[in-house]
Amino acid sequence: MEMKIGVITGGGDCPGLNAVLRAVVKTAIRKYNFDVIGFRDGYRGLVKNDYVPLTESSVSGILDRGGTILGSSNKDNPFKFKIEKNGVVEERDMSERVVENLCVHEIDAMVFIGGDGTLTSARDFSNMGVKVIGVPKTIDNDLNCTETTFGFSTAVETATDAIDKLHSTAESHHRVMLLEVMGRNAGWIALHAGLAGGADVILIPEIPYDIDSVISSLKRRKNLGKNFSIVVVAEGAKPVGGDVVVSKIVADSPDPVRLGGVGNKVAADIERLSGIETRITVLGHLQRGGRPNAFDRVLSTRFGVAAVDLVNEGKFGRMVCLKGAEISSVPIGDAVGSLKLVNYCGEMVSIAKSIGIQFGDE
Image (cartoon, rainbow, N blue to C red):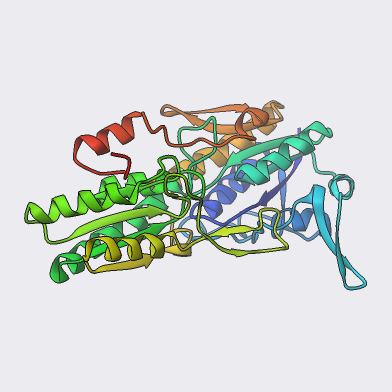
C-alpha cells in the first residue's frame, strides 16, 4: 500500500536530527515505497505550508551533519500561534489550518521529531484524528518512557571534552574551574559529564545546593594538597531556599524564561567565601552543535527506521523509544506532560558520591 509521510524537526536542534531524517526517508522509500515530504522550521512549516519533497538524494551525505536540513523552531506552538496584525501580536489556534494542509498534501501519517513541547502538540494532533508517530529528541535526556534520547550522548561528550581541557589549566594556575552546562530542569548532562570528566563538585536542579557545603568540600581538597578543583553546574541549579538564575525573557516564545548565569553566581560566591581564584566557562549552544557521535548516529537511525515501521503497521499515536537495549514504542501521552529527572537517591548520584563527588547537599 503506497502512503505519503510528512515529517518535521521541532524544538531546539541537536546532533542526530539529520540521521533520523535520513533513516525515515530511506526506509520509507526503499522498504515500503512511501513518499515523504518535510515541513520546514518545525510547526511553522505546517502552519505556513512551507514544505519540500524528501528523496534519497536530498538526504544523501547528512548522516554525520549536525543540525537539521529542514530547520527547526522552538517558538511556534500551532495551538497558540503568534500572528502580527496591524502591529499587534496575537495568539491564534492554527491547528485546523495544519490539518487542512495535511489534507491538501494527502498526508497519511506525520512523524514528529522533537522533545516534550513538540511531542505534546503531536499528542494533541493525534487527539484530533491525525495519524502521528513521535521520535524523542533532546540533549537534556529528560523525556519519559525512553532510556535515552538521541543528542544526549554527543552533548555529554562535548561537555566531557571541555572538562578534560579545563583540568590542565586549573592545575597549572591552582584555580577552581567552573563549567556551566545546559540542563534547565534535569541535571543529566552535568551528572554524566561530571562523572566522565572527573569533576569534584556537581550542582544539578534536582539537588538544591548549600554554598557553604560547596566551599567546605573545596577547602578539604586544598587541605589535602589538591591545588585545583573542577565544578560542573547545570544552568537550572539553585541554592537551598533560592531560585534559578534567569538571563532574559523571550516574549515571543511559548517558554519565555531563559536561564543562564548561575555559573557566574557560584563562581563569585566561591571566590568571595573561600579566597580561591575561580574562572567560569559557559558551554552554551556548543552542546547542541557539531557532528553526532557514533552512538547518536546509530540510535537516530534505529529510531527513524522504527518510526516508519510503526506507520506501516498502523500503530499510530505512539512514540518510538529505547527500552533496555531494544527499540520499542509507547503511547505519546505517556511520554509527555512530566519530565524524567535525576533521582537524587538513585544509582548515578550514589556512584558519584561514592567516589567523592560533592553535590552541595552535605
